[in-house]
Amino acid sequence: MAAPNIAFAERRWTSPDGLSLFARDYAPGPGPAKLPVIAIHGLTRNSADFEGIAPLVAQSGRRVLAIDVRGRGRSDRAPDAMTYTPDVYARDVVALMEQAGIERAVFMGTSMGGLITMALTAIKARAVTAAVLNDIGPEVSPEGLARIAAYSGQPVDTPTWAAAADYARRINEVAFPHYSDADWEAFARRIFRDGTEGTPVLDYDPDIAVPIRAAGAKALVPNLWPWFRKLAKNRPTLLVRGGNSDLLSAEIAARMKKAAPGMDHVDVPGVGHAPMLDEPEAKAAIFEFLAGVD
Image 1 (cartoon, rainbow, N blue to C red):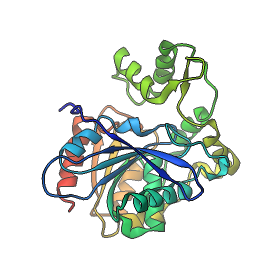
Image 2 (cartoon, helix red, strand yellow):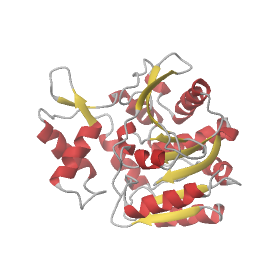
Image 3 (cartoon, rainbow, N blue to C red):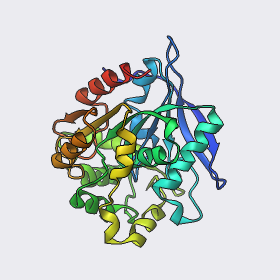
Image 4 (tube, helix red, strand yellow):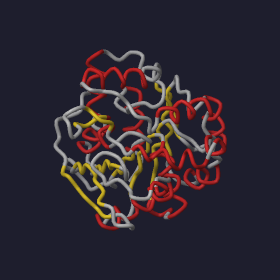
């Protein structure tokens, strides 16, 4: 099922420290009112990552807010790079909910977005009714995290959109070995924007990597099990895992399932970190999951 051509409204809200932040706001389709979904992207990405799944969820009757985390996409860059941390991001989400009049929501978090969801549960548990964790857990494989850290915030030479597509392929081909040239061109349009001189530039603040570098090697394998247990305890949770993921191993996923026996789980075959959530297996699991959430 392809994503319907559903337009989104452009929503802005203000962070606690005064940044102007952006979200794609998809209105719900007809039918009884349902809890909205707040979708949060990964470290170097933005709200465009959800353009395949968000319209489908909206069509099913749920409002979807796909956000640009501070420093990404159309959200302001932070003057203090040390605010690029999950706890600050989570407080930004609280501000969005307060300003949009949303008391509770279902969260859909890819990679870092899942960490933000866990942090939000620690800060304001009642805001999170249910959660979809996309290829992320309370523990991650150091190899995958080191791979991501190696390119995050690094300068790139992409004078043309063809070069941008080549960069997208080089960085992400391990996750999507089946992608065609057209897929990589579309991927580049999601992660790059037109720069001041008309050349593609990555659509995030390079300083998002500053807190990672400042924390050093110890930060590469965080222990967030207390956050995860708080999230998954008595709260519907779905884990979507890329079958070839180098960030969330099958062993870590198994430990998550042991810690949260009620958690739903689906592996997306042939995909690494992280599924785009428009894969048939991911979509089927997400809609089955959402059907059980009031």
